[in-house]
Length: 468
Image 1 (cartoon, rainbow, N blue to C red):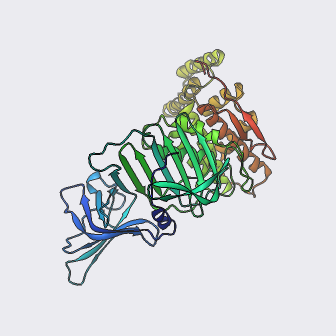
Image 2 (image 1 turned 180 degrees about the vertical axis):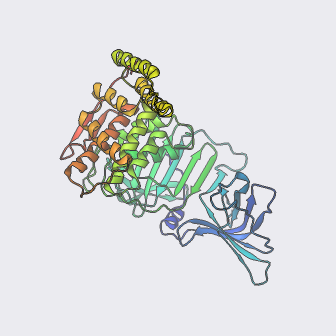
Image 3 (image 1 turned 120 degrees about the vertical axis):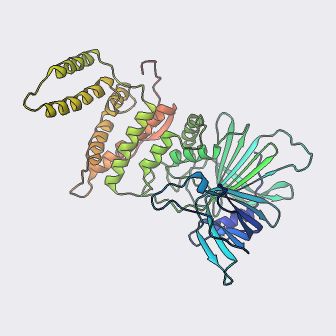
């Protein structure tokens, strides 16, 4: 596998929070001409809250270059800023969409000032082959580093490597790794002492690949894959991006689509789930997350959450996936349609002469319900259609109905959670996984959380016809 080069000292400095880039010049540039630019020497580092921050030392400081619209106001593009920082070695780091100055401190002389600005990301883009030398065509290479330790199933062992000059040579230690591939991308995930690294070799440049990888990892492991450092090399360009270190994710229990033990993590076939999901969502050419991924992150709800909140999140997430991926699904019973049309006709002729206002209100509400039933595209109809095709089970639908309807309408349990509550959560978790499996066409192993003992079963997607 061709590996993009990144200095291990930079990676280690991110992990231990000693990261710092000394800069000969940092320029703060407003998007609007109404405010002046500010520049001076400084540095980029992590602040005490572990957010990425640029600090400028300005000799002739005017008023802070921002004008907020007040509490509750959304900042316009004109109120945002950019940064261009030149480091001691001549590298140029940039950042955009900076909303405000974090801190503005004046010196005693009243002219100089120190300015702190928090950054969502910094990026360095440079040619791999300076001068007139033309690069050869070779696969794009991506490396992503996650500074949070995440357990993941391994399927191979690999020798550690280190760079000597322009070559990589084998080290003295052996690493447990996961290796898998899609139709045109080869992936390798390995665990080092203080970080997780993902490597990918691409036959072409895939736009927003880092976002698609994060989404597929989230679904596969039920754990966010927040990278802090990313290096992408493609043709003659090399791009390094650095993000703030995300706070650890609290997970009460691993509810990944295929359960794996944290100790015995080898030879568990979870990566086909990654490849199926990745291949499905890579059609999304937007920097935003795919709709299914947004429902997944909502269902997880920040990791460890209260039982009743988890029930609500799962119920709503299931309904969301059904709306986004199964808009074409729903029964079309002619007898039911005829009965609804008859009821609709009766309602139009119905009168309640004592109170015309009440009559109109009732007609409007019942008319809406009838139209919804005639369209047959509500969540229950979609679930029943999937039940008829053998994708899901009746018990899973019953658990969803019981929890979603109760908790979405303000129900609060008056007793401690019991076995039935945990069974409902397990069935809804499996229901969510199954409707995603069916949507992405996944075929393989999965964990049934709706059965005691959490057995590993086989999922086979049902081939959809035009009417389905």
